[in-house]
Image 1 (cartoon, rainbow, N blue to C red):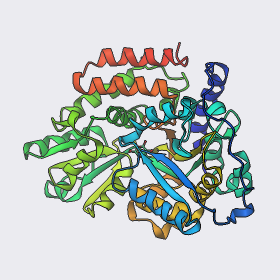
Image 2 (cartoon, rainbow, N blue to C red):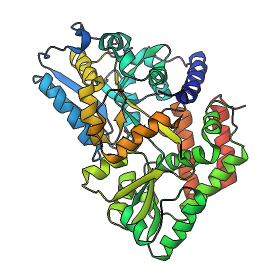
Image 3 (cartoon, rainbow, N blue to C red):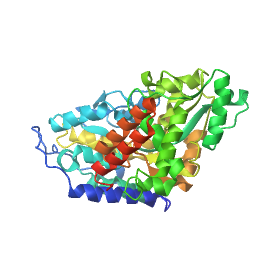
Length: 440
Ligand code: GAL
């Protein structure tokens, strides 16, 4: 990978060192904490069919594209281990809004699923990994994953010197999706700057088309949109500084980013607080809306709908910047089906598993050896951008900040989307950084 990823890695290393120093003490769960007896992991990816039993896999992937990708991996698992019953435990809600709370309760209550979805980066701190998760270092060694994943992603995945999840993909958050026909009919080129965006928005509004569709129902989407605005207005370096304390949230550029989001919201659908991200994307499919800022799981969702007339561009101002996140699968301590769980992680980390999952999910492989020919035009372009852009971490999806901070950040932005109070939002954002121990 490129050296600009080291920006992302620096953010994470600094924050994880800070967290190591101030990890809170907690009570041990009542359930069993020792991994069940296992068969030795097969060397070099060779796996014997498991005898039977169950595999409980926990995620929030219920939408089109997400569920399809997961099922594609399950199919591979079922072929290799036909005797195992897969329990697909899902709690719907984009970005894990509902799932993460349920998961915490299950982990601390001693009733963990075998494996669960976990964003690469600082999100793992929320689950107190040394207490509730299995370190996967041996599996990384036996499966050769330290060589299969890019070196800097490996660093990103390490927390307190161990691996806690197997990455299955890389997603991009800063994508502007658009309905090609709607833009063409109105002689509009995909906007590269916010000025171009607002000029296009005026034209579209005059024609009765919603310029920008958004849903903020689940409480993370405004924060998602804002991280992409921030990355463009501040640039990669200053954006990274927001998560290390090198950039204060009182910075005039943060004011400018808030003013920009406020103006963007004045061109949004008025029913935004009642819609999810996929409800909002439906506006594009129906030709009622022109543009939508969302992660590239939207590519998987459009594909699952059979919708093809969409285009994509970096969010205005973010050309050359890739706001990144990665989904991984973790292993719970006290998992009831240890052998089945290990076999699942092997599928998730394998070339075959990732090539089956990612074209449907709308993400690119975490592995470096996937065949690009299996991916659509959008995903091929994402692969290219990933290899040359400045990579910065997403806060809305677990990479940039610990969960407590990320949650406050998202709440501030959800309120701001409706009340547009720039000064109040900026003060609260700075305070959240102070409370996280990162700003002074
Ligand atoms: C992200 C997750 C993606 C996708 C999205 C919408 O947090 O990493 O895989 O599921 O939420 O739910």
